[in-house]
Amino acid sequence: MKTLKTLLKIVPLLACAYAGSAQALTINFTYDPAMDARALAGFQAAANLWQNRLTDNVQVNLNIGFSELAAGVLGSTGSTQGTISYAGYRQALIADAKSGTDMRAIANLPKGPCLSVLMNGTNANPAGTGSAATFVDNDCDANNSTIRLTWANARALGLVPDSDKRSDGNISFSSAFAWDFNPNDGVTAGTFDFIGVAAHEIGHALGFISGVDVLDLNRSGNFSDALFTYISPTDVFRCSPESKAAGADIDWAADNRTKYFSLDNCTTTLSVFSEGRTYGDGQQASHWKDNRGIGLLDPTAARGELLAISKMDLMMFDAIGWDVPEPASIALFSLGAAALAGSRRRKLAKAA
Ligand SMILES: [Zn+2]
Image (cartoon, protein in one colour):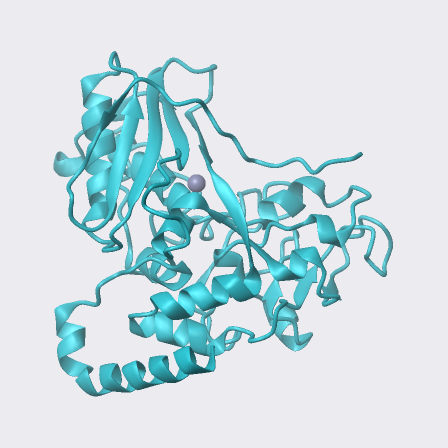
């Protein structure tokens, strides 16, 4: 039987653990005791960037490493993932909704059991097996009704019990590269921002992934559309002018048309995504579009570049199921809106 190539990687647990703060999100590292102390401190600083911004009371477990990898390889990462029905994912988002971003997202999510998907490739393509031409897949089989999310994202949504201590993923960097472990005084020319790159990789484990990368790897194969059960939480908000015009809920094609982030049925463009390594713009679809300074989840880091979590990054994490407290200054001016959102939430919960 032919199987899809995927990007998933799971590694065995290593020796010891380092626990973070007990408040809100806790990122718990497992690592080789002999790991470079600067790298360990850098990973912890990267974890703090997320722990200081996401308030979900969950523990995320990551294996981290810092050693000599193959020449030219900066690092390798992989996240543990699981699947849930689209309807189940939507219900979890509704139950977890707190912010204005959450309210906007859940108010606009399709209410049925399936997503109508603009995609390409596959042997269901009316233009021929593996064709680049896009088509609307709305037959409501496995790929239309399944969401694949990272284990950490599922934890944020309360879908995984606290007793589940499995690893959420692994991140390792090559010690053969020149790293700057202290970005507070700027990132030294010729080196990479270790804390920023670590925070970027943690961001993938927390849920910033796109299944379009799986289609991008397999688009030309003779595969049924139903095999592509890889629609991710960020993909639920992935749009294009063409998907909107075709009446599809999302754009999940592997090609080089523009795909944008939208929380209101593709009406408002909030940001733009990368499109895929093979058939897109050369960058993995699991990122923002490159070179626009959108956020930490941009696909590339340059030497000497300081990387930081942006408001757009946080809006996405908020939308896919993490809790991001709204700034006090905004809360002050939106008491009426908050009350309104509260009543809408109750209405939705009742309808659920
Ligand atoms: Zn990345």
